[in-house]
Length: 170
Image 1 (cartoon, rainbow, N blue to C red):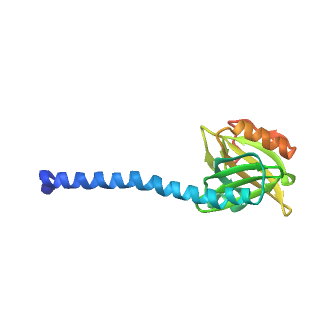
Image 2: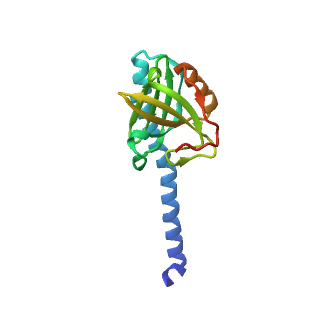
Image 3: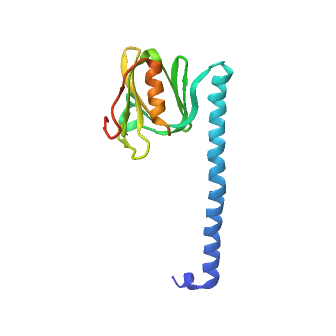
C-alpha cells in the first residue's frame, strides 16, 4: 500500500489505466464495425445478388430468440430484418444466424414487451408464430419502428396482429 502513495507509481498506474481505456475506446468500435460490415456483406449483399427484392428493410434489428432453440439457449444479438415479397428474414451477427420464414408458414403476429424471458421497456418484441415442417414455433425480433413493421408483416402474411404492448407472453 505504501507504493501507491508514491507519486511516480500513481502516475504510472494512472497512465496505464488511461492507455487501456483509450485502446478499448478506439479498438472496440472498430471491431464491432468490422463484424457488422462483414455480416452485411455475407447476408444483405448475398440477398441482393440473388435478386431478392425487399418490401421493407433490410433494417438493423435485434434477434430476440427462437422458441425451438429453448429458453436456456436464447442467444440474442443484433443483425438485420427484412421483408421480401414472400418471406420474413431475420439475421444475427454473432454468433451468425439467419432465419427465413415464408408468409405461408406464419399463423399470427404479436407485439409484446417480453419474449422468452427477455423484457424490454423501450422497444417491444415482434413475435412471429409459425409452423415449419409440421412443428409450431415462435421467433422474436426488435426494430425501432415496430408498429409499422408489425402491421406490414401481418398484412403481407395475411394474418391477424395480436397483443398489446405491455402484455407478456413468455
